Length: 165
Image 1 (cartoon, rainbow, N blue to C red):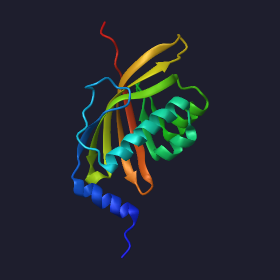
Image 2 (cartoon, helix red, strand yellow):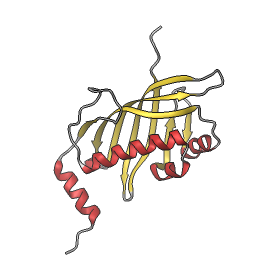
Image 3 (tube, helix red, strand yellow):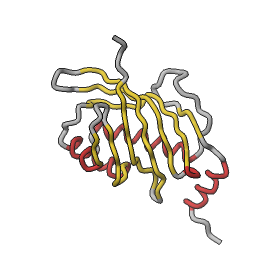
Image 4 (cartoon, one colour):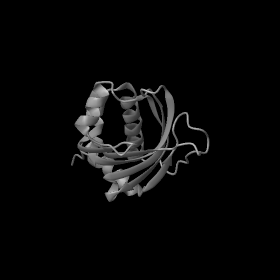
């Protein structure tokens, strides 16, 4: 009997019993995140998060098509909601204010027997709004679903971390 690679991968993954991991990121200050597991599913999701950040920073709409689900729901820091198409159009027209974008830390929680994940983290970016350049720091929550061809981001919401006044 021949077992498909994806079936073998998923059976090994679910046998591991991994539920939550704090995932350290390259370039993050020490102590920001602690790894509790490195299952293949967590590694794949962390890679998807990294690819998503790179695609936003470089406005790589083709890469985003592979990472973002068709029913994507994007809530910006100002409360504006965008669909997948609207989000990618803004990036393609270079109307998005982010000039750089990177994840600083993330915590991954697997749900639904490993088919759904909630990723909470912190991000930073350099913005180029009409008023002049500024640094942006924020927190984000993303929901991912595992599909037959990999992880797809279905929802993202971010909140700016503003300095105390």
